Image (cartoon, rainbow over all chains, first blue to last red; front, side):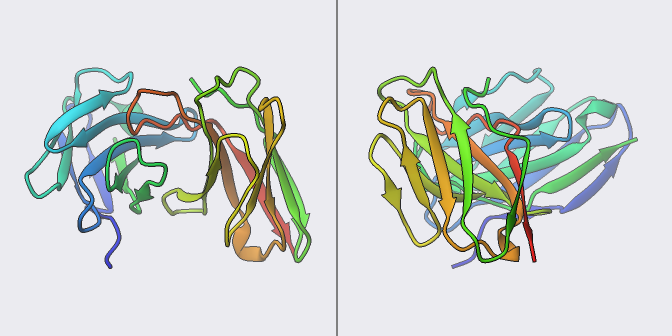
Amino acid sequence: KAGVTQTPRYLIKTRGQQVTLSCSPISGHRSVSWYQQTPGQGLQFLFEYFSETQRNKGNFPGRFSGRQFSNSRSEMNVSTLELGDSALYLCASSLIPSSYEQYFGPGTRLTVT
Amino acid sequence: DAKTTQPTSMDCAEGRAANLPCNHSTISGNEYVYWYRQIHSQGPQYIIHGLKNNETNEMASLIITEDRKSSTLILPHATLRDTAVYYCIVRVPNTGNQFYFGTGTSLTVIP
């Protein structure tokens, strides 16, 4: 079956703009998590959604938000972009929360100029 | 914060076993040890996990010490495609799907 898909794969934005990233989980998976990966900070957890509800949130400012739709697809939004938001944003899906095995997508590479 | 310590990098000859260590001295009784790897330009990939017994699957073996303060991931016959960053993760209980990825070990398999 198809893996986790993320769109777009690459994105260039200007400081101050906002951006929306999309993630389609594996069919049947209802839990979606988002991570930010940068060379300096590594992989950091952003938030997790299950059944359209945010279950957990990492230590990121309120400019980072997300949502999940009834079909389990998820979006994350970053408002008022800063240079430091340049990163690889990864989405992971699993059947249920707390599952030991998460399936990661290829990520969206965001560059803020 | 990550609760694990791993060497920054390691090399391994192709065809030999790769042994990747991880220290998790503050692990609590109900926390599992997970291993993921990330091949360049891809998302992380699940490898194996365990609580206190040694585990083996088609990809690797996981050896956890009796006091559970450290573990070793073993790739029995490393190939060039095993070159990746390997993350050892101790999952904090009751935090849902939240995994704390540390800096990992960059494994280079040498031909």
